[in-house]
Image (cartoon, rainbow, N blue to C red; front, side, top):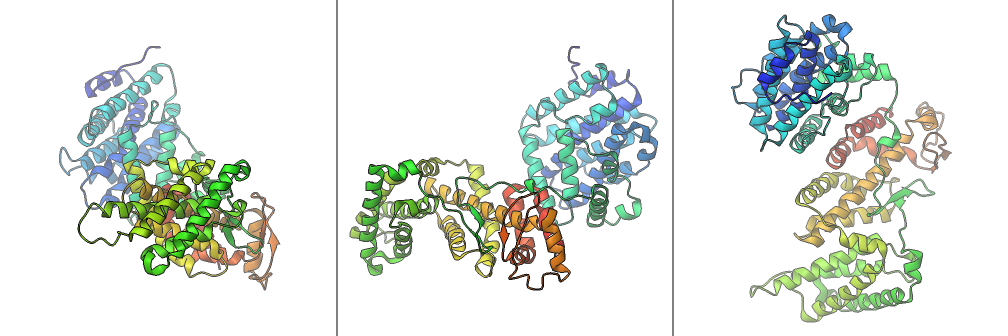
Length: 554
């Protein structure tokens, strides 16, 4: 069947006149759901106050469409009045437009004149798109999605199937994607169990539907709880869903470690340690590459030999670089050496820029130091370019948004790094040094490609550490690891700090000697870790995993 073309409110209302009431209510619900992220554009100071009523109204109207046999029962859940209190902020205020769309779509499920309510809901949603979007692309995508819904009705799709299908059949507009990401970040920062609603909306976007009892947990709460605000309501929803599902998030929800950064694993003592990343065998065996490596070592020694009096603040980076140049090329860490060499690049560029000014500049180096450093950096550039991983690190380029995102992650990581430096029996000294060193380099790096690459490397390395930390701690909440941990809590392992056991459950690894210290570290630094995982991955499941680890403690 050809596509039903609907481009405005009048065309939608004309089409709805020939359709049953439940069709009008379903299309209205989907129209209002599409504009939910536009709440993030509002100047309304208490955005969290309106978010819950809007979510409630949309949940009621969606549930009525998805489960039409329970429509009468669900329509009495108060979604209309919950959102209606925010409808009077002004005819062009985006908050009011979205609230109107949510309230009218809930009303379409309960009022006799479902057609008018549904048409108004769609109109308010379209007006919100026009008011908040920078151009007409989002509005065009909105009416295209409405047209596809209408076409599916004429193709004899059931209302329930349409309600459970993806909100944006041709993809969510970029503007709304960005706003939803911002809104998720804002809600997560409130620490009020907002992941229950974030997950609910992500499911509506993707067209995935859970068991009916789980979906209805959002709308089966009485007014006495709703009136107590998001902290109480969201906690209750979370508890009900957990009771219905009786399962924990899969360990696969924890992101895998990125390859272009320092990686981490558990050593034989149960500590989180750096995973070696030597040169590829072919590069290490290449005679020319080995010659450049030897030259790099000699020139690094020559730079260090100038002494701290001449090197000044360059002394620390120069010595760390020289320490990374092991006697055998096979023993070096490409990622660590690249990071330290990149710091020397940054210092040399700062010196060169200082030479353009006649004024004294702290970045300016003595002539002998500058030229010795230049000779070293030149040789090191050739050597690192001869390694595949080194080339990849050199070729990384970040856009403005990526740079800003890396800065936010690195800022969120600082409290975790400080806690690591003060911890015992969690990480090896080498791991702490690597994480802290890269973080400090990123913090002090100037603008430019080298500084951006340093920020990106620190972001990835810190993310890799947190991924390993959460994976190891959370494994104790799953499978046989959970049994061992519960027995330890009950006193079966009196010497838990020194005990060793093997986890052979779903994750299939390894020996822990000091696993209680890893779990304790997560618990003591839970809030900082939540801030970090929100900044790094915008994934509410990771927040839930941190909470589960915390709750595993006595």
